[in-house]
Length: 182
Image (cartoon, rainbow, N blue to C red; front, top):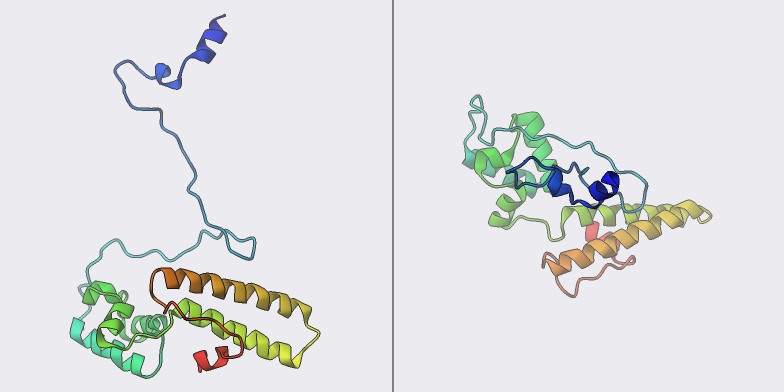
């Protein structure tokens, strides 16, 4: 009988007297899986705790902005610009020095790419797979992977249209895709 009464009691009744908080629940954080594979990777880069520029960095924000613009005029993407600034100029985080990210700096100067970088890279991959399929017609696996890449392109394009980073009439077409990345 005692066990039956205890089973009917709510979990809050097991808390110490005077305590109004619920018992702690330990829930594992939800990790989003990959779209077309099994991976649920946890690894990622860890940003430094301090958000200010390092004390040893003697470059001014205007010099960083000029460097970003110079590299963008050469045709580099925002992530490539960040890698070059990190590796060759010792600027760990552009946002800690200038107060704004590389893409925002480029948008302010009118040098931002017309299509977002992740979409650009997917289109580039689809073009290279299609080129491979022209030479190797019997490669069924590549044909399947092309379908997956193009479905990712369509999904990402739909998202960018809703957040208005792409024009509402923008459409991916495999025949004109090579001109988008040229």
